[in-house]
Length: 335
Image (tube, rainbow, N blue to C red):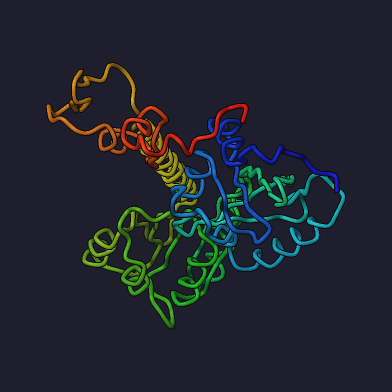
């Protein structure tokens, strides 16, 4: 098998942490059963999970339905192949991952494998490829849908449509649009009922523009209270709508980027919770004074200021002092 080899006494987790801790590519290692062993800082940011939430979890957690089985099959075949690398997501065979918040995104992946002792370890390098933003039009008037599609044809959007609120609700969950253009008066489920269903709070990955020939001032007020960002009346000015679509999508993209930055800062802050600088320690009892003026034992202080845990043993000097009767059991170096 063509693969990387690592000495048996090397911990692969330590290797990955050292090599990829600051990488701007999402990197995830997993075992032969496709359970996650390690992920780097960038993977935490991209997927929205912390390392602790994903460790030992199935890798399929990060794939939407429809891609789990194909990935599993590809990796199973890759195990026995002589190739060093497995590539996924190259056109025309697109591949998608899914974030903790349910957002799907297009991905290119390179997977390598190596032996660590008797174990086969895989490492996935995941690159998020920018796909087209999806715009969902929910309107039962086919002429309006075609008109909007024609006016936005030059823009790089993936435009989809639904003829009523019930269909639109399914497509919102399935297609993850960044913008929804919503009519109010439709069969099966009207626009106002849909707004009540989706309960916009501002944290959603999409914005809603109302585009309707119906509705009075109370409907306009209710639409904004239910989370719509704009309200346009039909017949509409196509240039006004196009400008509003572009600006609304740009605003949502900025919000999304800002949220990702915040996630990264939180992760970095947690990682920064390590020991540095001068530490006041008692010369006699060896307790450490924390920044609040309280004195703690070394174990308590280190555990609360780092990611280290303690395991206990006894050094030779203390063993001789505490258990002198055990001295005669010790072997001489040349005996």
